[in-house]
Length: 259
Image 1 (cartoon, rainbow, N blue to C red):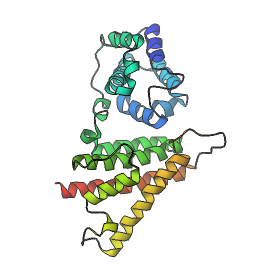
Image 2 (image 1 turned 180 degrees about the vertical axis):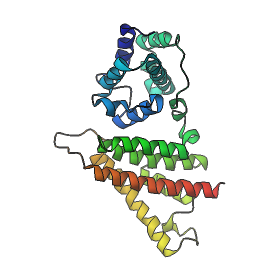
Image 3 (image 1 turned 90 degrees about the vertical axis):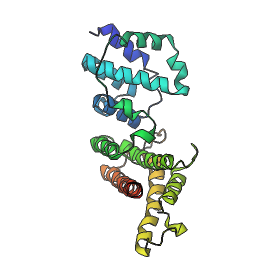
Image 4 (image 1 turned 120 degrees about the vertical axis):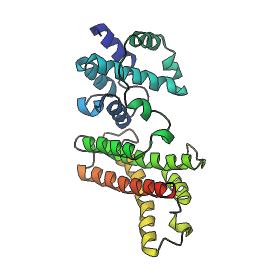
């Protein structure tokens, strides 16, 4: 059983001046939803670290241990978090939670390369998260709409073994993915795409560009100044629906070409 000192130690280990590792607000919500079924940042409406502490204060031991183990696993996966993983407090925390066993969480599969986890279930999971966030945080919904598109394009390029750079914009990723799928109307690749279909495909270009800009201006892409004002819920819904339309069409096209 976890004591109060144990819980305080867990919260303190992952508290970096209000931040938790390298998570944005939306990615932290995604992570905790996949781990313990709760978008913690949205639920407690505090900083990420304080939201984590609030969750630890009232959650069951099993939930706390599950999330802690998932955070440990996440930390050890990335080279840029090596300093954290090698810290004395992190090593002690790892030793402490190793004494506890919990059932497998969904996040262990979600944290793997997108190559192994992007599928219809993943799309549905992201949709459910966005639906939970749209009332309380339209900003995060806009950010997740763009991230879902980017994940879809990267995954398809991975499957085709098509190289891309970490510096590639989402517009570039879209272009490369659409070329592989014979959807790039500007290249007139497929004779099956009549003019009306081409008009729709060309509109996808504008939507992808618009979502990227909207995420930077009104999403969670950058820190916000004093004059920042969040867009109404309907704009978050627009971003979500536009993203899902392209993602479903793109993913369905890949599945049709690769039964």
